[in-house]
Image (cartoon, rainbow, N blue to C red):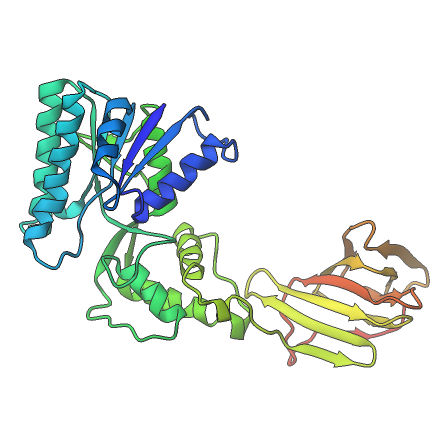
Length: 381
């Protein structure tokens, strides 16, 4: 299948092209589309002669080309309606009646220059379908967000992500404004589904089935909570689909100097203990380093429980139920990754058996440490 994508270097185009290449190379296998595809990429800087060749040979057309922020408002009609006319006339020239998708906007229902140009492009495509019998797919996208979206252009989410990630100011005139958003991966999945005739339709139009509705103020609050993660060591509530997608989007705007951040290492003669993540409902994640011959722990908890995973070195984990004398021993090493449970009511320790190597242990506790209520009681195993 030959797939023509106009506006291939734009936000939606880049994401669609990259996933089609993943399908073509066998890296993405979760689509009902054969890997036997060829992608024709066309953009504003392409040679016009290429469009002739592509329109002659295309089996499906995604028209993602368009103008969003022109210098002059008359360019809306030229960019959004004018190019669509050129594209469809070229297809007709070669008697190519393959399916054609057009990227429109929910603003096509509004009486402004941008909306009028989008509506004109839609009507042009519907007339083309009536004239040629070709299948057409008109998507009125709401606001689209995700990686590679250009900030300070036509997406408030992209601008806010970029500015907050880069310590720049933002302006929110009305935080109560409700946004209707679709995520770029959901858009791409829908467009790829359309290749095999599985598009989602609503009357004469097609739609992305997953739409997120949220206020501008709530979006900004989430973004500032993401910014505080290196300091607070929290993670977002990724059980919420929108939060998960927005966090991935925010990360894509981080400057290189913020891609990594330091952690506080609590160091003494025994080694170190470093907290990585703390959450209000999923516990605390840390890494513990024990020097050769060192024993750590020797305490028990009423309710707190932990999981120890040795990832490097050779050690011994011991547990003894309070009120009994028999210890349970687990010899552990980085050569065999396994979880050892630290059970409430059992005093426990971890011993580095090596004389030369550090013992590195990943530790999860069911609750973040609270110095006012540590639930930790010293008692040797």
